[in-house]
Length: 210
Image (cartoon, rainbow, N blue to C red; front, side):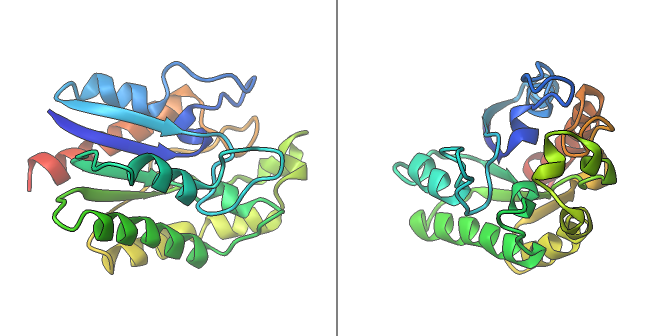
């Protein structure tokens, strides 16, 4: 059985844009249902960034968590999926897309250096876009700015370019799914299903069809 890690933020955890609860049918859950020949390990965290500590939100520094959880012992994942970047755009960081891509490259390099003979594949997913209606949401309008809306459009190009230079695989989530009209940041269950279908096809091309 193939073992796959899904490492991400609130859109991997399944943040419900309606009431901030956890969606039952988030993309990782749907993915597991579609691919019973795989074991899907879900590791999503609200507020998780690539490398920053979010104020008043512990355990949000992604690369620190990744090292602590997955560098202690070789977990023998066949595929590690990383989908991060949206929280790098928070007003407290305003991180450029290139910097986000470069940090994700460090995840890949460090993991490979740690386990030199490991054959784990990496799939990096560039996040869905931050929509303009985020500025109308009572919660997120204080956390994001027009910078985030525009910079999210650059994730795809920057992350795809990074992946090409790091022998990894790429998927642009924004081609398949969109943030909700309710908050402009998170997917609803219909969008989670769309993303799951795209990810499933990509996994098959990486692990089963090559």
